[in-house]
Length: 163
Image 1: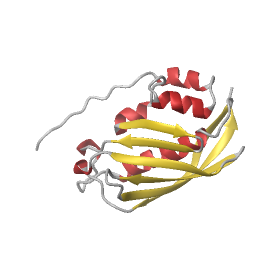
Image 2 (image 1 turned 135 degrees about the vertical axis):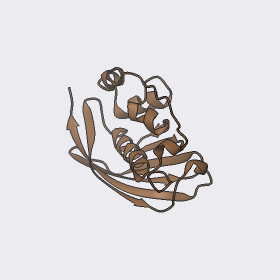
Image 3 (image 1 turned 180 degrees about the vertical axis):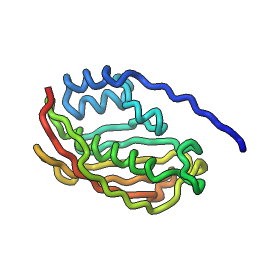
């Protein structure tokens, strides 16, 4: 049996969390996409990068590899769900003013096509379908480099004050 390994490094999440308390959601996520604020540690585990944040939208990419495989030899559904939960939640975050935060309440993922290490970079896009001050809703999709749809998601998030 062949053994593989992967080194994962990340920055202390408290640094980014402290900066989040000083910015609107959109400004914070734009700073993250520009490399001014570190990505969350889960991003290192998932090979995920923030590409762009716009009002009500978030764009990320990720690189699948064999470390994310399930027992039957394809990328685990948790990879899809993590990417889609991230772009849906962050899309909602782009609508939040300073002093507001969110957490996922529910996500539904529809898996449409298999992903494996040969799929190459995948692209996740999330967009807000209904902003809110107590609950907000978003949808997202996951596509390969040719634009082929791999999965879709719908999400509900709790919105609450912080600080």
